[in-house]
Structure formats: structure tokens, C-alpha cells
Length: 140
Image (cartoon, rainbow, N blue to C red; front, side):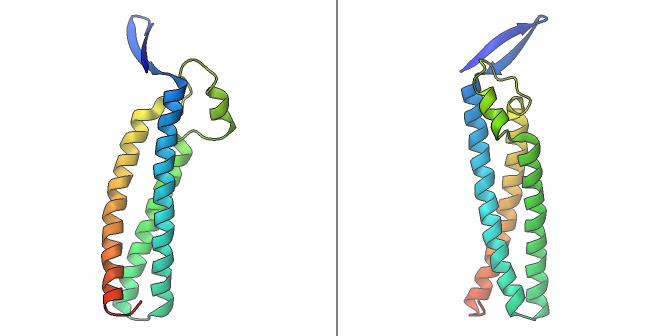
């Protein structure tokens, strides 16, 4: 439920703490899911790297692995900078309004998370196509 608070003749929307907390939990779950998928893909790529010396296979595997590492770094920054977790979030849950700096960044979280999700989908699709090709050749 959103409320309008008047401050110096400006109308600023605020969210209740429970809705802020729920939104942050939502984004935190999405980030955790993407981190798990990234780890799974990196594990498969490491298998390719450890089993094959073919230059083209290794080159593609290294490229995807580096792309996934770069994406993991972005997720880590998003998680660290924008997602509220830990003791401080639970303490803020007792307040009536959502004024914690982490909770107030919902629009920024959504924009960054959506951008990262798009990048993740692109990298994941290419990586899965690469791994499917290896499986279809009975190489993995």
C-alpha cells in the first residue's frame, strides 16, 4: 500500500516497510537464482576446459566463462549496493514507513536487475547452445 507524504509542498510516495521488504525479498530471490544458474554453467564449462584441448572449443568455453564471471560481478555489486539484508533490514521492518536507503531504491533495483536479467538470458542462451552442440557431438 502506497501513502503520500507532503514535504515542503512536494508529494513524495512512500511504501510501507512490509511492501519494501517484500520487494527486496523478491529481487533477492531472483539474484540468488541467477547466481545458482551461473555457478552451474561455470561448472559445465570447467568440465569442457578440463576434458578437451581443441582450440575452438576451449576458446568458446573461456569466452562464456569470462562472460559469466563478469555477470556474477555485476550481480555481486547489485546485491551489495542495492539489496538490503541482514540485521539492519529486520530492524527497519518495525518502522511505519520505508525510509531506509536500501529500501528506497526500488526503482533502481528493478532497472538494474532487469538489465542484468536480459544480459544473463543472452549469455545463458549462447552458452546452452554451445554446450548442446558439444553434447550432440557426444563430446560431453
